[in-house]
Image 1 (tube, rainbow, N blue to C red):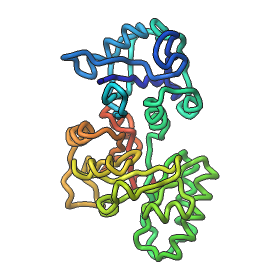
Image 2: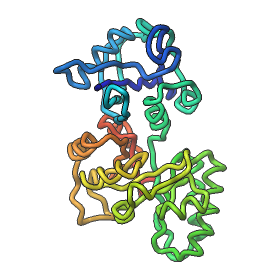
Image 3: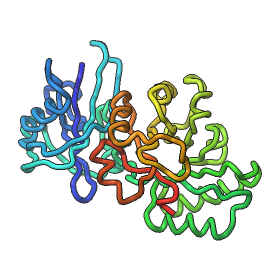
Length: 311
């Protein structure tokens, strides 16, 4: 069964949730508004129709966000989630018991329909995913001050990448960065093995292409709130990221970038094409910075990832 779901976000970052009415399956639980895709309908057409019927609003613009698949007694449920960035009218509960606006972190504490849980989780991820520059052979005070300044400016998701650092120094610095990130309400992902990231108390791991290829689907067993991200450049890597149960991916390179001068940019068309081939939410990387967040979200991305543009 194919179903669309809408993530409507207001100016303060709150999302709209609807409570299923009495007499319906899962009555009383909260969900993102939407409904079944009829035969011959596209996802966008179904979204437009359902939101007009359920909420009395008309979509101006929307982009695909992610897809959730669940096995049910009747077969496979496919929940196709879209981020609605603009609409006309004021939402009213035409078919639900109630509507509420909540920030994603608050919404996650509500009794949600099970398939809506990962969508709610992803909706709360920040629009900027900052990747640290390689510190070289030493983590200097200047380097740490640079990271701290970025966290003060509101970076909420940080990937630490230090390929040139010796193992012992890496461990020591990772603990320092974890403390810094948590003090500023941010989450730290290590560009390392999952085992090392878990051992050092990081909030997650970011798998580069080589680690992604060598990770078996059955080998990744992590804590419930531990994030798994992966770098992908083609459909094969995207399929592998889905197979291991990644939470999100980073698709690159969207534009030309000095760090990888020989890589061919895929552009926004290439980004969208790859995004649509999978189910996972994605950040866009490559020649992008904070000023590209709006465009990235219009293209269906969680936001932008970057190195030099964030520091």
